[in-house]
Length: 413
Image 1 (tube, helix red, strand yellow):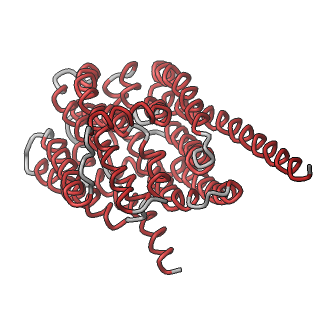
Image 2 (cartoon, rainbow, N blue to C red):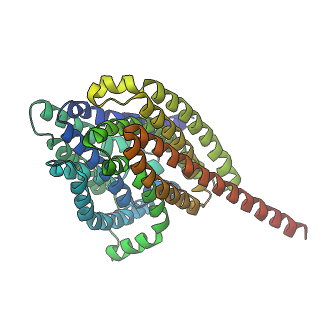
Image 3 (cartoon, rainbow, N blue to C red):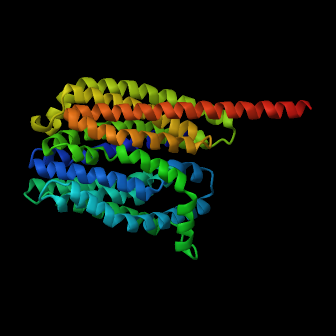
């Protein structure tokens, strides 16, 4: 019992510890030059999508895969994933840098690209592996603590008068340092013909990769999308809205991390479904509480933390709160029900529909209503994702019942 509490408690606590990382530096930047603040926000937005591209679906399916393996085989699987993700990183680097420079405010391209690289490097992180192996302490050692130290150091440098670009440079260094440190101590030796094995892994894992990337295009990359139609001032405000949402999402990540491996430990589909629904109720409750908190406290909290100039208004807060609730529900259906039940295709469909509708909606919402319009459009796209996933779950449920009836008839015969 004590071991289980430590396991779930540790995995649930880590996202809240990671929350301290951006807030060690971002309030310092937000009170400075508006263009620099917008550039960092755009770079981090594109970088978040790049991290999902590099991650290639492993944070979605990886924890379930390594949860039931012995340590040696799990480490081999991580090494294969690292090879395949490194291939993607090399291919994605130049296009991502060019896109970031194009979207950045005039004169801030270098800062935006550096911010993109610092966030994008997280796609190589071993965190998903350690979640599946239920090792919260290792996540803190190799990921969270180095990044927290980097954020504190960069904040001190900027406060001392150093250019803002030191922030992403330091964060990129500590992120890559933690990954190299983990690989040196824990990863298995690359297999013979590792590049060939990596390309084969890319081919085999294309479906979960597409699901995660499609979701990230409009969720993780919302600031970049807003920058297409929004002025620098609108983008600067929406960066704050995005930071509020990302901070709140730590509660969803914490709950999902705590139960994702547990849901998949038993091969019985009835057990998976029962455990998945327990997790869904938890996430739904978190979604309601979080939505109310963001909607009511958003304007006041962002004024205190980021300053009056870029604080979000009441309408934007309501839109971000609704988005939070929708993400809580679709995270539960996607990660705790559909994926463990082998219905990843429905996760892929839902995210593609959400991206296809969400990207133009956010651009239109920004053009018509600024930051509040963008927030409302984002919320609507996430509710569309929920609707598709509910349809998918009902289809899986019907298929399971039909298969059960067929087995029962065969046994009677």
